[in-house]
Image (cartoon, rainbow, N blue to C red):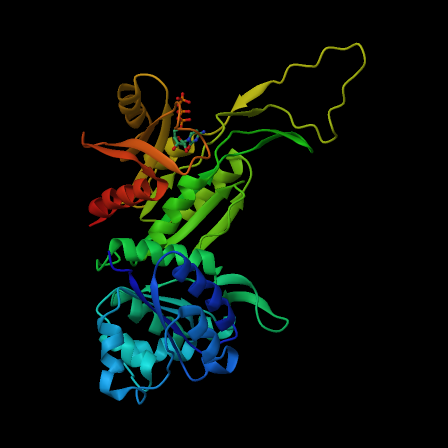
Length: 400
Ligand code: CTP
């Protein structure tokens, strides 16, 4: 099979150095990459670096190798164009169809999916001109990854950082896998809970579970690649933040409930992938619980936690909101799943059989998605991202 052809556009921001890492991810995983920097990008990272890392010639100009008509050919042959970092100037040019160098010409001739990963100072990102350009690009089908929040060049901190190159790569990989299809969650806000809640006993101990958060993170990542605004309510996983996703950290079931209710207020879909503790210790000891010589340990009294999935299913903030739950079952998987779907009142329930191979923390999963309308969608054993894509297919069909 031919290697997928990727055009990596680099515009002139200090984050250009991070695009070297993105480039390596592509080449090391079997992609053919043509780097097209702007003239300003070359102030930050020189052509020799791009050329050596990609194994391909590098040019910013439409006037080089004119006989090969590069300003048309590069875009026409690409399977994916990703611009990282995309400056405010680059977003403006792309939104208005300006074409004064090789990269902007490539963007006009590309018929493949296009991903922009903006990076700039917070003020520039928040400026109405930039926001309107981003909205225009998204409306036309481009995936614009939200910048991360954190330290910017200089002393200031805020929204505008280029997300981690490994996470931009994951977005690109998902977009490439989907091919030329509309980002069908563009304009949608989706909320995903992930991980496992921790219910504290004292300042050093908690009741928890083995959920790794990988399925929820796969859901967040795939939704972002399909154009959604994603709020990820993350209960304790130790995973890197997915690119372009708003991550809200929570600890306990009660904190998760508050975060879900807040985020769900304007959400088109809520997916409860988190493993929520059904019970929490009735009392929290403010000092460390000590063992006492000659005394048996005191039993731990528990109280019920709120059932978040049942609550949001029964109280939708918008009538068309789609609510998805997860269930891990060991016996009578489908019958128990159907009963749970009814009891919780959600639209879709992803039922996993728990057993050998199908363990917490694995990279792969197998499931059946049960729907309130009676349909069943089996998802064969495979990457958690494949299951996530099936969930979004079903959600998108319900939102359409
Ligand atoms: N869930 C929730 N709030 C809880 C418990 C679970 O929102 N307090 C959600 C989970 O995020 C998941 C779904 O409900 O989407 C199924 O969780 P599960 O624990 O399997 O359901 P239970 O009703 O607790 O059923 P069981 O008696 O099998 O534990």
